[in-house]
Amino acid sequence: MKRLAAEMLPIFAAADVHREALAALIIFVEAAKHERLSATLARSIGRYLREARTDPSLRFSNEQPS
Image 1: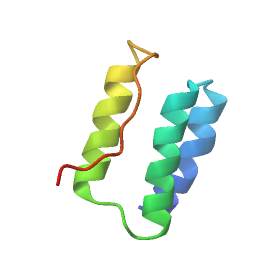
Image 2: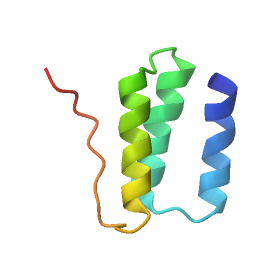
Image 3: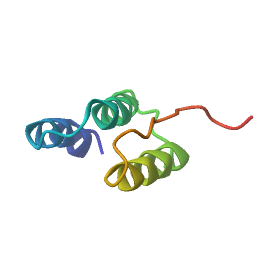
Image 4: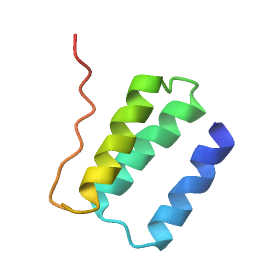
């Protein structure tokens, strides 16, 4: 997962992905790098990226329900 995460960021950056999507990806990369990536976070980021493709004004929230 660490390797995949590290390879994703440059690909998305080269594709001129909007700033908020890159921020979500950075959260993904850092969580994977520090072995703190949960399935919940991965799903949340994936859902955000799918929705943000059609709505670049959408903001990513990393808040976890308590």
